[in-house]
Image (cartoon, rainbow, N blue to C red; front, top):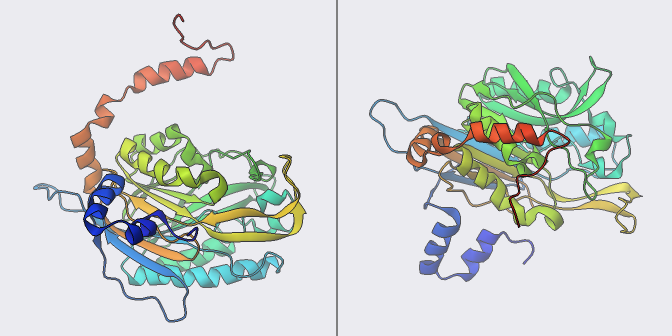
Length: 378
C-alpha cells in the first residue's frame, strides 16, 4: 500500500460515481488525458500527460498554449561509485527522458532539485560530494543541457550544485535557466536553507543572494522556488509580483517529514498568486558509504529516508494533475494556456484586494530586534 499514490488508492477503492465528486473536491476541474507517444522500449519510466484547460477563448488575445514537462528520477549507480560515473550515468538516463518529452511536444522541461547527484548533504562530508559542484555556465551539465535545448528548441530548467570559481570557490544550490536557442538566461540560488533533522545543507551552502528573478523565456515568464522555499509563502509571492506565469519547485524531500505538506504547498501558491506551479520530487532511498548522525538521538544510519516522487502540476485556479508515482522515474507533461493566469486574476481579484502597503509597514517593523507584537488586551 505504501507504494501507491493517494490518487491510485482512490481509483482502486472509491466507486466511480463517488470518485468524480471526490476528485472534483480534492483536485478541481475534470481534466483530459493527452495522447502521448510511448517511451522507448526498455526505459523504466512512467509517462503521464494532461490538458489542464480552464481558459476561456478571448476575443482580443490569442491562446498562449504551452506544454510543460517535469521529470522525477532516482540514482543510477550506488553512491560508492566514482563521482564522474554517478553523474555521467544520470546524464545519460535523464537525457533520454528530456528528449522524449521534446518528442511529446514539450516546450519547457524541468528536473528535480540537484538532479545530477545524490542528496548527500545529510552526511556532512565535504568529500567526495563537493566534487559534484560545477560552474553554472561552463560546467558539464549546463554544456549538455545547452546542446539539448538547441537541438529541440526547448527551455530547460536545470538545478545543479554550483561552484562559483570567481568568488572564492563558494558553493551554491543553483538552478540554471536555458532558453530555447541554447542561451543561458540566468540562474536562481536557493533562498531558504533547511536546518532540521538530516537536512544539513548549510554545511555546504548558504541562502541565495539573487532575489526572485523571473526569466522571460520563449514560452513564458518563469521563476524557481527551490525545495525548502515552498514552505515560505512570501517566497512564492515575490515571483507573482515580478510577473511569473509558471513557477517550478524542484525538490528533494522525504516522506517521513514532508509528504503531508507536499500536495498542499505548491497548489496553494498557484491559487494565491494566479500562476502555474510545477512541483518535482526525486524517488528512491539513497544509501551512503559511511554512517552519520544528526544530533537528534537516533543511532548512526546510512540513509536519509524515502524520497516519494508524486510530482504534479497545478493551474492558477487550483486544478491540479494527478501525481506521478511514489517509487520510480516519471515524466509528467501538461498542456496549459498562460492566458488563464490573467483570467483568474480578473475573476478572483487577489492582486487588487491584497494589502502590500499594510504588510510592508508591519514587516518593516517586525525586522526591528525590539519589535513588539500587536497584541491587544487579554
